Length: 469
Image 1 (cartoon, helix red, strand yellow):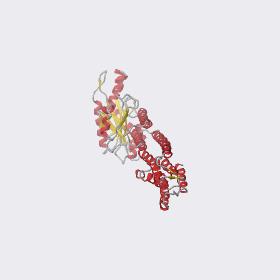
Image 2 (tube, one colour):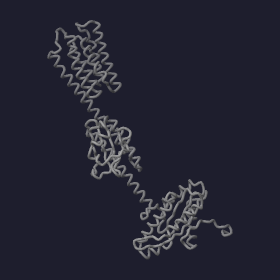
Image 3 (tube, helix red, strand yellow):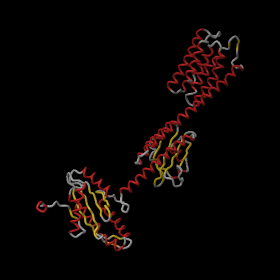
Image 4 (cartoon, rainbow, N blue to C red):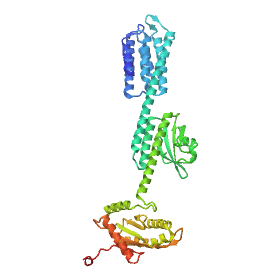
C-alpha cells in the first residue's frame, strides 16, 4: 500500500514539471530523477530490504527532481513518498540517515529553483521550514507502524515455533530426541532475533557443560564451565566476546541446586518477549525430559522384578524370541536356574532373609553373565539366563558350571551366613525351535539336575528312539 500510494504521488508530480528558471534539458533530468526514485522504491519492495548505498543518491534525486517542478514546494510530495516507503526497510540508523537527507533535499530544491509559482521564495523561509516537521512526523509514524508490524510478525513466528516444538515433543520417549527438537527450535528463535545467542547449561560433576549453543560459534557446545558462571556473567562475555548483555535463568529452580540453566546473551538489551520465548522453550524441553524419565521408570517397573530389578518373564520371553530370530544355529542357549534349599532359609530366618538372598543371587547371576547374556527372575526362587553369541554348547556348559560354583559360595545375610546351591538346566537352541520348546527343554534339564543330586548343571539331551518307544 505504501508503494502504491507513494508511486501515485511520484507519477502525479511528472505532470508538474516545467520550472521557469530551469532549461528544458534540466526539466528532462528532473523527470528522470523522479522516475528513478520510483524504480528504487520498487526495487526495495521486491527485494524486501534497502541498503546503505541508496542513502546518498535518494536526497540528491529528490532535490533535482523537485527543483524541476513548476512549484518546487510540491517536491514535498516526492520527499514524503520516498521517506514513507523506505521507512519500512532497513535499520534505524539507515532510516534516520534517509530522514535527514529528505529534510535537506526539500530546502535544497528551493535553493536551486527559488521561483514558486509567481514569486521568489528563499530556501529558509517559514513556509519551507514549516514543511520539514511534517516530513519528520510522517517518517516517525511510518517507522512506528513498521516496527510494530515487525514485532507482531516475529511474535507470531516465535509462537508458531514453540507450538510446533510442543507437538514434536509430544509422545516422544527418548531424551536425546527431545533435546534435538529443542536445539533446532532454539536455532530458529535465534534466527528471528539477530545478535542474540542462547546457551543451555547442564550440571555435571565438577561444574557445568554447554549442551546447546544456538547462535554461537562452533565449538561452544560441549564446553565445560565452573559453577561460578551462574552468578558471574563475565564468564560468558569471555566465552563469547561481543555479547555484553546476559540473562541467566534456573527455570524456576533454586539456582544453587538447579540441574539446568539457560543463558541468553545479546549485543544489545534483549526484549522481554524474546527472553520469554527462550524460557518457554526451555520449560517445554524440561517437561518433555521429565516425561521421558517418567515413561522409562514406568516401563522399567512394568517389565522388571520389583525385588531384584531383573527382567520379568514377559520381557524375558520377548528377548528369547528376538535372540532365536537372529540365531544362525548353535549360538543361543537358555539356562533355567532353580535354587536348592531356598525354603529352609525362608522358614529358618524369615521372608526378609529370603528376599535378601534372592537379591544376592540376582547380583551373582548378573555378574557371571555380564556381557554374554540376560538374567531374569520367573518368580519365587526360579531364575533364568539367556546366553547369546556362544561359540558352541561347550561354552554354555562352562558358564552353567561357573554359575553353580558361584551360587554355592556362602552368602552373608543380615540374619546369618547361609549356603544354597542351584540346579541349572541347559538347553541349546536349534534351527526352527520355538520359545516354548526351548523353555520346555531347559525345564527338563533343570529337573534332571535336581534328580541327579542338586547343585549341578545338566544339559538337555534328546531321548533315544528306544526309550521313546
